[in-house]
Length: 461
Image (cartoon, rainbow, N blue to C red; front, side, top):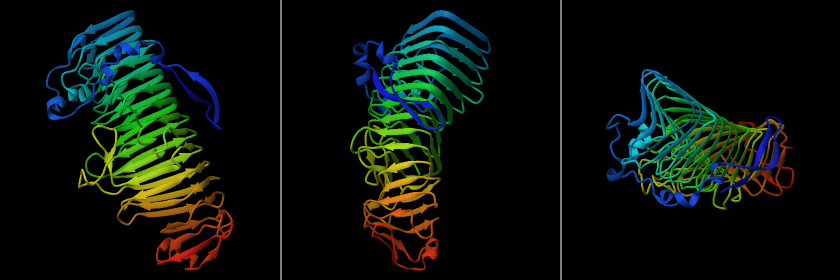
C-alpha cells in the first residue's frame, strides 16, 4: 500500500515539498502475506527459545573464511530455520543486482531476533558484505539482512527490502556489528519488525537517503540498542513509534521526516533497571504523531538528554513530551508502570531546543523531572504540568533570543531567563510560580514580577 508523505528537500534551512513516496509494499501482493502478518512475536519460554545460539547458522549458500561474489542472479530457499546466504569467519561478499527470496518459518524467536537464524542474509564474525541494486524478499518471519560480531560490517545501497511475519526486521545489527545503508526502500508488514534495528550486544546502524514503511504493531522505523543514525530518511510507522530505544542508547536524526501511529513519536525507556546516558537528537527534521493520545517524545524509567535543532514536532494531542515512571510491555502496544514492575523509576529528561518553534505541553508523571531549555531564537507556546503521584518537577530556561507564550499557569522549580526584564514572556494573563528556595532562582530575590500580558512571576514555598 502506498503512503503519501512530505519529503525533506534540503538540509538547511528546512524545506518541505509534497511528493508521493514509493516503497516495496506498492508492488507486493500484501494479501498473500496476510496470514504471516497476524502472527505475534511471543517471547514466552515456550516460544522464545534459548538466549544462546543453539546451533550453527544454516544457509543454502554458506561461506567461511573466503571471498564470494554474486552478480545478476537469483538466490532463494524455502526451509525453516535456514538462511539463503551465510557469510562468516572473516569472509568478504559482494552482491550486485541480485534477487534474494527467503521462505520458511523460524522455530525460536530468540534465535531469529538475537542471532539472525532464518535471516535472508546473515553476515557474522568479522566478515564484510557489500550489497547494491538488490531486491531481498522475506516471507514467514526473518530479517532481510542480519550482521553480527565485532569487526562485521555490511554496506547496503540502492536496495529494496520487503518482509512479512514476526521479527522480520529490515537491517539488523548486533554483537557490535555495523551496517551502513543508503538509498534503501524498506517495508515490513509483521509484528515487531523494525526497519533499521540494533540489538544486544550493541549494534550500529547508519541510514541515509532512504524510505521506510511499517504496518505491524511494535514495528518502529528505528530500534536502538547501540547507536542509530538517520539522515534524509522518510518513514511511516503505522502502529508504532518511529523510534524505540531501550536503555543507555543513542539516536541521531538529521533532515528526517518521520510519522508515528502508536504510543508516541519516539519512545526511550529501560526494560530492566533505570539506566543513564540515553541520547536523542533531531536536527532540521519533522516528527509527526497521528492520533490524539500520542505525545511527540516519551521517556520512561530512563535518564536521558534530547536535542531539537530546527525541528518541528506535530501532534494532535497537544503534548510535546512526557516523562514517566513506566516502560513498554513485551507486546509493544501499551505502557506499564509500577503495577507491573516495582523496580521502575521516574524518568529524568533534559531537553535543549534551538532554532525551533514548538506548540504543546510538557508533562511530568509520577515524580519524573524535565529540564526544558530554549535557545537560539526558539519559541514555545505551551505549558508544563504534573500528573500522578510523587513530586514531579520542571526546570525551564530561556536565552534572550527565545520566546515563551503561556497557555496556562505554570509551577516550576528553577526558572531562568537571559532577558532579565522578561520581555520575551507572553503571559496572556497566566502566571509562573517558581520555588523561592531553589538555588537557580536566586536572581529573582523572591520577588513578584509583572509579566507582559498581565501575568505574574510569583514565588512559592
